Amino acid sequence: MAEEKERRNVVISAKNLAVDAIKGVGDILQAAINAVKDTLVTALKGVGEITLEATNVIFGTVRGVIQGVAETGGDLTKAAKGILIGLVRATKETGTETMGAIEVTASAVVKSTAEVGGDVVEAAKGAVEGAIQGAKELGLSTEEAASAAATGAVKAAGEIGAAAGKRVRDGLTGTISGVKVVIREPFKSNDDEKK
Image 1 (cartoon, rainbow, N blue to C red):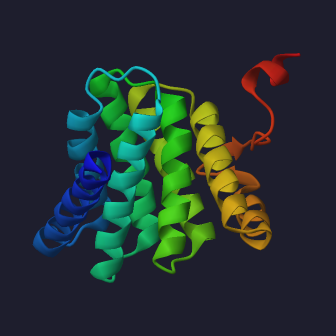
Image 2 (cartoon, one colour):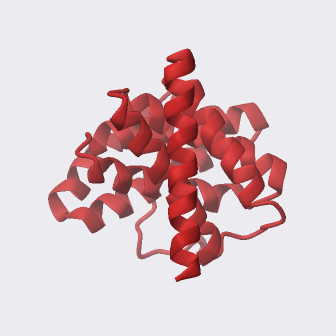
């Protein structure tokens, strides 16, 4: 009961931050970056690995931002990009494992976009673009970031339905922002890929 209330508070807080920023400045990309970064820097402080609790906080934050952007009639693709940039910046400040957080966040973007009736393919592309830009800013591998975001997006779309999964997979195949996107099969672990 207390966890559910806390989760709702994260959603409401992130949504309000996004709505206020969009109304104040009108820049959806920057509003999403700031709402996610500000919320997650506090919530993930000291969290090294992506635990169930961290996943829930990330999902709640993303859901709130997507709902806020949708409520203001904003561009969900820009929001998706901003969410991933904000997430990567937050992981730098908190010491949270970045690639796992990228995968979870891209998944949350796709599911939250579907919840508000948005275009999941465009949201997935925005998430991959944001992961790439965030990785560039921090000097991380853009290929790994793109792969993590694409894998999370495809996995989430597949959970929505087979048709959505195929559309997102097709939409992410190839090169995005100058980076070749490699989607890891959801049923393969990193250890399986090394064999």
